[in-house]
Image 1: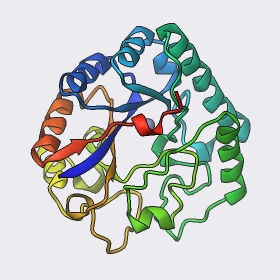
Image 2: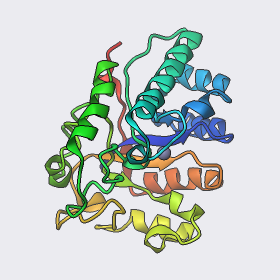
Image 3: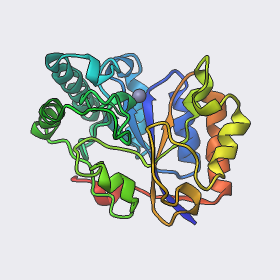
Image 4: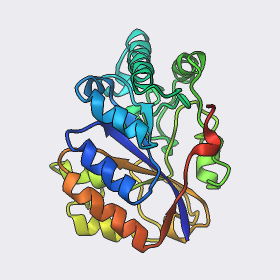
Amino acid sequence: MKSVYLTIDDSPSLQFKKKMEYLYSKNIPAVFFCIGNLMEQNFPVLVEAIHKGFYIANHSYTHPAFSTIDLKQAKYEIEKTDELIEKLYQTANVLRPAKWFRFPYGDKGDLKRGFVFNRFKKSDKNRKETIQSYLRDLGYEQPAFEGVTYNFMRKHHLFSDIDWSWSFDVAEWALQEKKPTMGLNSEEKIIDRLNQKRPKDCRGFLGFEKRWISSTSEELLLLHDHEKTSSFFPKIIDELQKLPVQFLDFTSFLKN
Ligand SMILES: [Zn+2]
């Protein structure tokens, strides 16, 4: 049995409610990393999600690649959505349980553009640390995820940073691309990848460690709440449950 934390990025889409209710019906805990300007358009469904026990986290305001924006804008992206989430929990009349952040494209603003495992890309450590300090000052944190034991994640300090990482990307987002990443141009290929022992990862070279389904490590799983892959969403969840995958809850990481 594979143990997995489910995290979903780019919420809330117009199909958010359906996905959220599907997960609820299956009793699957999830964190939704939300884009601020989408939150403003879909506030009530997010309140509902909170009442159903899901967690709402920060995924910036306009979803930029942080390596391409200046530091002032980076601070704004973080703070603006932080305020929206604060307002959301107040509206829901629920104490905000934690402050969690994930960068769009996994781009920490260090000029590596999210290719964290690519040792040939130069990293601007000062820039990265400045943006990390914006998160730290607001009280953001990433749990230690001690059950996620991959060396490649430890080696690249992905758990010592404030922002949340992921260990397995379902990569269903590739279906929306004109030239799909890693040749993932059909739902079958995405499902097939779930069954592979060492699927490719688009963040760069991963070494020879056992991966995904053959590893004993827990996983931080990444899915997306995109319009175009909405009808595929329940199928992915069903396929994961066939594997079988056990979805872990986040309660041990909460403050309140
Ligand atoms: Zn995103």
